Image (cartoon, rainbow, N blue to C red; front, side, top):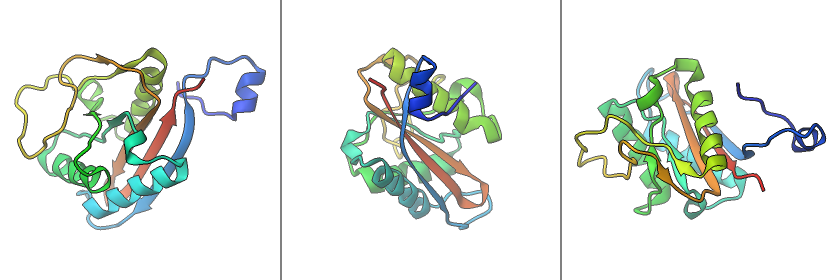
Length: 172
């Protein structure tokens, strides 16, 4: 279960805090019914960074929408490159472990991000066997990687060009 609440309320009840929402971005480019648009996704990422007050270099890893389809993955990586340039953080897909849960997909990825922040690891992209040279990223293939994380980005891309990007931070 994913519970979001105000920090003061969580502290008051003595809750274990896994992560803090730093900011988010939303966009709807309506470019295509099922294919994401690079510029629309890049715009959403930039909005999330601005809302969170972070620069691309502040992001420790990206939980990509990462459907494992060539068209979507190429477009998403192109959008990430548009914002991050050539300095991409590790970019993973938790769908490789969970499948595509449709409306729950980004919530499940947010849970993975919160656990990664709390437990100090970057989740892997499992079953990764043949890298695509056009998708030249560090996808943390097949095994989780220990890491000291401060900020993570969770991309969610939906049909009709509906995009959401969430920035989570380690709670201290």
